[in-house]
Length: 154
Image 1 (tube, rainbow, N blue to C red):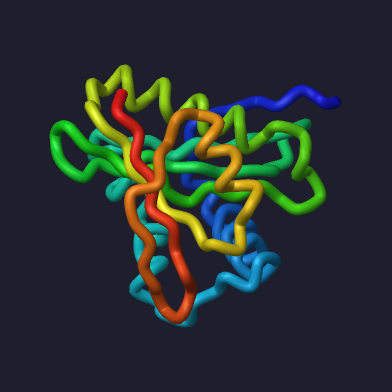
Image 2: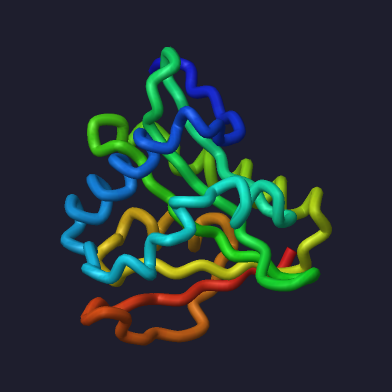
């Protein structure tokens, strides 16, 4: 298995991040046609990095193969967002590495609780989140998709 590097987002990554985001949503038939849901990806530094959060890029040989973000909710709570791994590289524990890095960053930033959500269709993601101690706390329908909400106390 090739070496995966986890690093912070750089502005030159913007187009690759957008394409990976869209590919991931379409792959799982989870795309919701609402531009407001994706506005954060147009200002990653402002929304995540410069706002007590993080946006990680996973690379193999300098190719972007995964992304994941930590978004501040308030001084004690943050949200895991934008977890994606390129379909060609799934099954290689890249999502686990990104999630573990985000959890570690949340602890470094002194957050007390993390939340996240995923589509009911994304069974692998559900298993990953549960394996890291996230507990389901509600279900809701967003844009016609049944969504599971998870939380983890740090």
